[in-house]
Amino acid sequence: MFSIILSTASKYLLPLLLIFSFFLLLRGHNEPGGGFVGGLVAAAAYALYFIANGVEEAKKLLKAEPIKIIAAGLLVALVSTLPALLAGRDFMSGLWLEPQFPVIGKVGTPLLFDAGVFLLVLGIAVKIIFSLAEEDKR
Image (tube, rainbow, N blue to C red; front, side):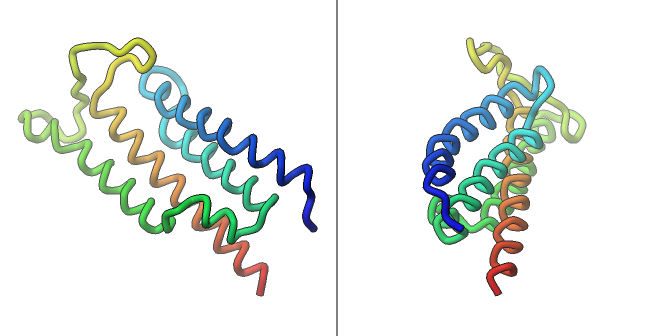
């Protein structure tokens, strides 16, 4: 059943939830939050949009196959381990850049790893949601 109120609200809530998920991602390497929680909030935003507008509209909005998002997340998480190995440090040792940024704080390999986890969780959750929605249509 289509609801104009839910459809309109989801179009306004989606960007707000995505911004909040990005905030959680950036906050996570210094305080509670991070890639996992941020990815779940982003997936919840797409789930809300799907419930309000249908799975086809949500897929158009996502603009990428969930499998590609999962692969990108795994690649980013893997790449985050390379700087430590190239510096002769232990696997997955954290390396940070010297300047601190006003809003973000310290930037380094833990943030890069969190970004990979964010993409991985987003891709897996959205893939599950879309698969269940398509199965329900049959």
